[in-house]
Image (cartoon, rainbow, N blue to C red; front, side, top):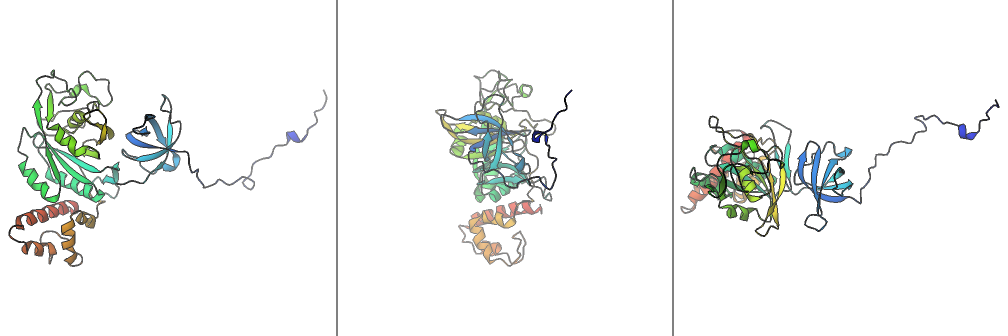
Length: 381
């Protein structure tokens, strides 16, 4: 057998640290990235809407790029996406950037927890859904939600449900003096709907849609209800991005199903012993609010029921800025003034003392409301 003659094609260069090309720290600019709206988050997968309100509008599924590992993407975020953005089955795009947020609603586990949890981004309005009975309203929880919204620069709407069971006047008088809009709804038995169905506005889910996402047919109630006046709620939401928060059992998902008939948000019942509801919404989801003609008229972001709303992230001075008139008065307070009831030489007390008789009641209600919110933030109540 003839001996094989080696040539230059047989040469193999062994890699070494000395000759290896250093890894670049520069990242691609992704100039061809498309922009999408995050409408849902589920275990590391993100549902996005691309080309919103255009003929090419489509829904896609995406994951975060490695460089965003430490950055949380939430409902309402506007993000830049690369990869397969056709939206076809089995495709997965990649989120490479989170665009600047106009607002960020946050909460902490408690008032000492330094870790902030972002709930939603880019919302205009926080809608606090509270039942007037079954379960009983919790004003401290409402106060905390108001504080978080004001800190985020958002407007606040207090939506009181189940007015067929209790009077809404006490809560109106408590929150309207601090600029919180209040809308009241009641449940009306719908004789035309078959028992166990919801037809888009009821109390017990959507009959016949047990295979729809988020639906839980085991939680269906026996009777069907409709929400009135639904148009009053819709009028406060149109043209805006609103995030709904509230305790379990207050009727939040029922309200969402009425506002967005194809939402199919699971609804539950209130425990007769504890007076609390079950968590039926397990993840935040952004839903289009249709107008009377079926056209998009805003966004509603439904969130899971919450039982705590920590405010460790809120700066007290930011809370004061939400009250324009009181912020001006507080400029005359001594340095380090807490502005709480009983604070020495607080200018707010002097402002109340100098009130004209016809303004005294309104000023007193406003200062008391501000101090109640402040106490909720500082944990002095």
